[in-house]
Image 1 (tube, helix red, strand yellow):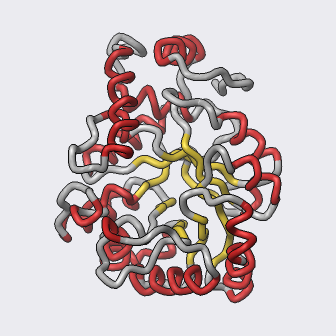
Image 2 (cartoon, one colour):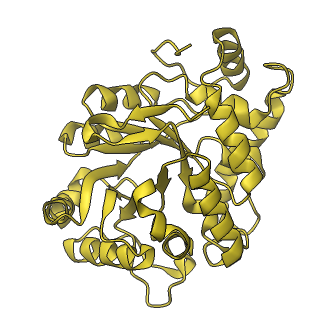
Image 3 (cartoon, rainbow, N blue to C red):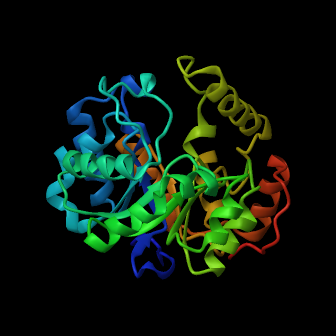
Amino acid sequence: MTLPTADLGRTGLQVGRLGYGAMELRGPRAWGPPVTDDQAGTLLNAVLDSGMNFIDTSPDYGDAEEHIGRWISHRRAEFVLSSKCGCPMSASGDPRAQPPHDYTRTNIRAGVERSLRRMRTDHLDILMVHLSPSVAVMRSEDTIAEMLALRDEGTIRFTGMSGELPHLPDHLALGVFDVYLVPYSPLDLSHGDLITAAAAAGAGTIARGSIARPLTPPPDVLPEPIRRPLADLHERLTAARLDDLADGASPMELLLRFLLGHPALDAVLVGSTRVAHVQANVAAARKGPLPPDVYDELRKRLAGPSIEFEPEE
């Protein structure tokens, strides 16, 4: 059985509804788990071998772009590749020591050129603005103009926004982004209606931060402003005691299949450094959305904010 697929908005790209988020390949210099070159190579090839055809990364993700270039650039025709812009260019190369994000035209272009070198490719399928800057910031720096120039040159194919509240409604109102990467999970449904609005406008929609983060306690090395919200998600998920739902399905499967029930969501990103996790995620995605009664019970136990749509069956 193959993975379910979706048309990614108006892009014409067809992607598996389960995509791979490469943040987990960032390595210790970006507060990530240790990942050897061989582990990264095995993992990335297993992702493609499993039928997943969408990979999202960022210059901010430590070693991730280098791993992608080293291990699967020869399989470039097999996957849709998304990365980010606005990420700072640090002489030290240490993401923990980098200055704030820079959305100027010069930095946008320099970052894309570096990403292409790292990933050994001549184009990005999607270039997303990272960290949801305000429209005012992007206008003052000509961010979007540079993205469109890169698109016209063929360096990127489509534009995107890795956005969230409070700025995401303003991003949508611009009408210029082809794809939106949005935080969304059963533990926080606050962006659900914005996903619906993006899809209604013809944009592709992808959920991030949905599953891997709540499943395990965050590492203590993370700065406290980052670690505490992640710890809260994990504590809420543990307190919900989901083991008795859907014939003992794992929390990972329940969360993933819940997300697949959003009728306007094209894909869900899940990251891991373990092949077994990738295989389990693929098996869960192949089952499709949860039955309505399980969906309703999961939502009740996690007590997420209200949403307006009815889940797919």
